[in-house]
Amino acid sequence: MPTFSASNFGCRLNQAETSLWIQRLQEAGWTFLPSWKGSDYLLINGCTLTQRADAEIRRFIRQVRKGSPRTRLVVAGCFVHTHQTFLSDEGVDLVFPNEAKDSLPETLISAPAAPLSTPTPTLARGFLKINDGCDYRCRYCIIPSVRGPARSLAEEAVEERLRQLLRLGHREIVVTGINILTYRREEGVDEGFLRLLERLLALSPSFYLRLTSLDPRAFSPRLAGFLVSEPRVAAHFHLSLQNGSPKILRAMGRPEEADRYSRILSLLAKKEDRLLAADYIVGFPGEGEEEFQEGLAFLEGSPLDYLHIFPYSPRPGTPAALLKRPHSASVKERVQRLRRFHEERFSLFCRREVGRVLKGVIIRAGEVLTENYMEVQVGKEISTEREGVFVEMTGVGRGKILSLLP
Image (cartoon, rainbow, N blue to C red; front, side, top):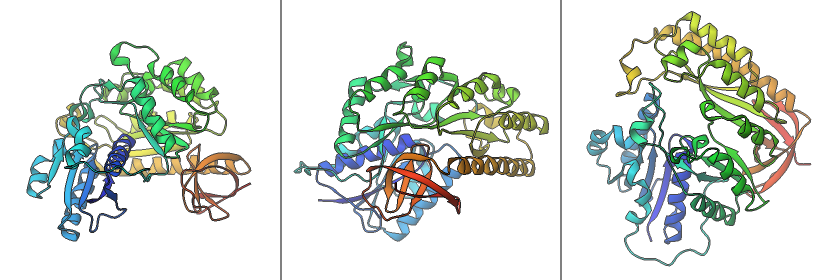
């Protein structure tokens, strides 16, 4: 049987898709290898959200071609839509655009094979895809062009995938999609995401859910109340805020006012031991010092603990790509200012957690990921990945919380 490896770039939705490909190929008798060197096939699920992501994937493909020339390259995902000439020039063996990526495993499987009795999980956490595509039209974003319109998986299909993940032993399930809060909204279903969460949690008491990036435009007070009060929803919320200046938000095509974002953050902050995180874009066209200061004031007045900071990256074909950007030196200086803000807030969060006992999941030997997304080094060696544990936070060192198993 063939051997294969896989490399994932980009969002957790890509991780969910890649993990499903791995499982399907293992069930067909293929052997998964952790390294691409020497494998018969390498599956690459590519991202094109930023120029940096594009460059990283191009470098990686050239590295594989040089380091393991006999490995057949299979490239799928958003990267395919923007790099067809590059993929052809590099001699990539198979290409799967987003609309065809679900057929990737079946295309590779050339003949029936006896399935393995139990596929070996390759990720400590289980990734559960619930939707794809996007109907929003943010002026900087290429995702609607490469992923298509919003479409949701049927609730029954999502439930069956969850059962598969639980049979594999996963205790943390990561709910992922392009915009999970809009689940079934394209069908006219209100509160479809809340209804799905209730159905999933009713299937078994043996797991908890972690939610990927949450778009504040799709929040309702009822949903926020459920996320705060439900103990099996992880105390980690990552919002795609993107900016805190009303002027820049309007320029981005995200007309929701910053005060609405503040109300949502205040609601989510009520969850015990929560880590509140957000994406934030710096240097969008039209951002001057006044707009930057306005956004910084919003952040300083918020309960946010963590920032994922992006310098604006123009994507060809999007409306914002044609606009004049701030000077690069100004953008770099603003990024550094935001990083200092992030470091101060995250340090406060880490110190606040010392003395707490949190649930988590073992992600590798000697390391636990807590429900509020802290990578924890534990005081005794443990190696059973996917197993659920509790950890006591005993101190902070070298950027990670150090702890002991109680």
